[in-house]
Amino acid sequence: MDKQLCELYRKYQVKAESLDDFLDRYYKPDRYKGRDGEIWGENYSKLIRQSNQEYLDNYGVTWISRHESITGKTVSYYKP
Image (cartoon, rainbow, N blue to C red; front, side, top):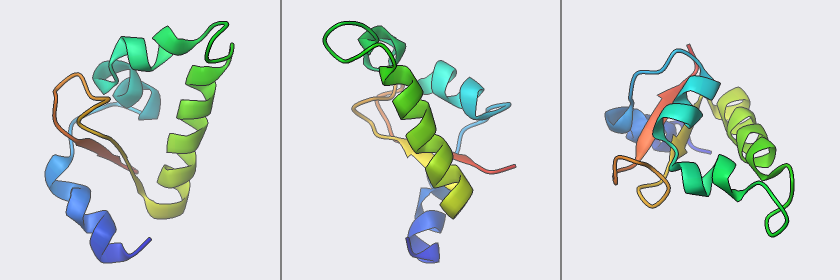
């Protein structure tokens, strides 16, 4: 991912204590932990967390799209 693209998400940055706090606070519950179960798999939320952790580790930023965010807007979290 291009550094300029990573910086593009800076304007969407929200406050969070950690990645877990970010995901718990800003992900729509029915699209995050609400999908664990028979249809999506028992560990669906763990896969979302793992994917976001990989972006954070590799690029220093991760985000939640406006479709998945409880705010209705894109939100981002940067590595502390």
